[in-house]
Length: 240
Image (tube, rainbow, N blue to C red):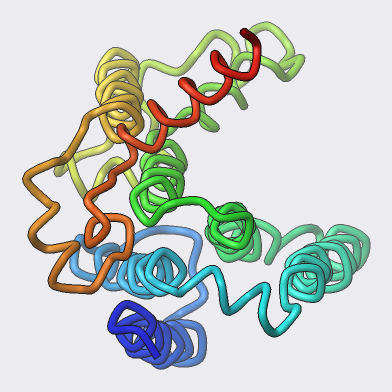
């Protein structure tokens, strides 16, 4: 077993323990009460992303896990979340829907990352996908979309866009107060820029850490950038 896979299993076990604790013992609340709880709830996701990114993709193929794990990702969403959502909307006036969505969206992000890794994606690209999407999830874009793409009646609570976003507790714990409309726009913009940096910045200064964890593509002297370059060169050669 490679060093990276050993670290993957370690991070995966830690993610399961902390994630289980957060789900079972922390209050199932919509509002984020404190920055400490906010950061703690992000820890299982971060560990799971590392576990996926460090797992040897060859093992998925060797044990024929690619299709079954893809089915499992789909099943968690369609055979668990969807029935729970329908029940909550029909019989509980959607009291628990927001909390369930807070749980399922990080799982979907991890599913995208896992499928990319099973398809041979590099460790770096998997981490870009996982943490870039997490930043977008935490950006508040969905709050802005709620206000803009839905047909709110003119003069209602949400039309025009409120001057203070008094529901956005995920912004409050980081800003120290509920954001004004323009603060929320700036908050969203900063997160979008950060997601783009995660997507395109080289992060070469992290390569020594990657080698410590046994990342194969770094041990082979390759990286996301060189892999992309090789792929592009191959396409050009094939075309010619």
